Length: 433
Image (cartoon, rainbow, N blue to C red):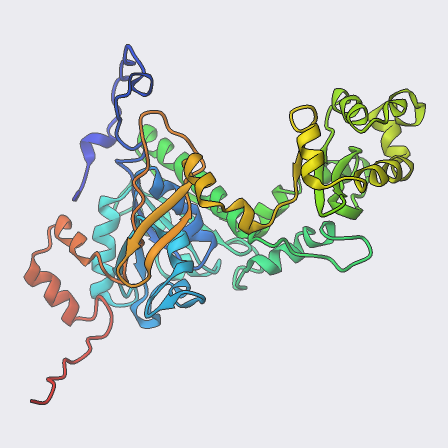
């Protein structure tokens, strides 16, 4: 355990590069983030997703959980919930540590500040008004550790009028315009089947954290870095936003998840299912119509360019749709895969085939004392010379022993417990004889 690391944080000369890459020689290397300690006041989805990959890459992520509420709310989300453990919690918190700590208790605050003194970053995902109220900003923590990086992930931003509003993925997908761009034109606006606003905000916060730590190690001083679900979702509007803000061009929902301007770039119905086609280059359109035995379309001036195909979208899609319905999905994939970008529209269950995940080194598989065998998807980054060692998520308050690395004795930890640092003391009841 580490109590402080001033020498590591001091500016040092550049490290000479090794003569050979250990990844190419079969030698192993330490985890890329092995010297990074993060104190995470996080819960539910967005925040924990942001630190998940940092944990997989070797960072020490210490979750601060509120004992009064039973810890991270995701511990109680079904299915697969047992006591204060759940499969939902495991999906976001593998490999992390847990300290149950009452930040509003003076003894709990003392422990928290000693943790801050040993850490690189304090990371939170709370309502925008909460970081300052709980003392999680650089103005409040920089006096304890001048190099600390304070990352706040909120729903709408710490300084905005909506700071006091809770932010949730479904709300943000609706408010940011995502839902209005998703679904069939004849149907209602549609939320993604995944919590993508949460996930992108978490990844944005993780990026901010790494940028802040690199800066702090170089400059010797930390800072605040704020992001939020709403702004992260707005940023993902990307090129439709540029089109609209620059030229007033509005993107609208298209049938079968079609791209707003590239044609064909969408799903098509087959004899027994659906198939995805992405003709994002001129050469792919030529290869597609040749593979469909529709070579005459290559010479049709209505379809001779991106702009022409977009202008005559309905005529072209009618022809292609009729042809795709003449064969099964498997038949079309066998015929066209490798010639044009094409793939079957598969179910989640098909995509999560354990053998395929294992082959891609994307299968997480470990034992949990309460949940039994836990399997999930892993880190989508291959790191030369390093293989993540996936471990279960922490039980609530399991890692109080981390305090011993901060200089606390067992007696002092016991005294802190009596003072309510780790939540209210529950009297022990002696069972009857």
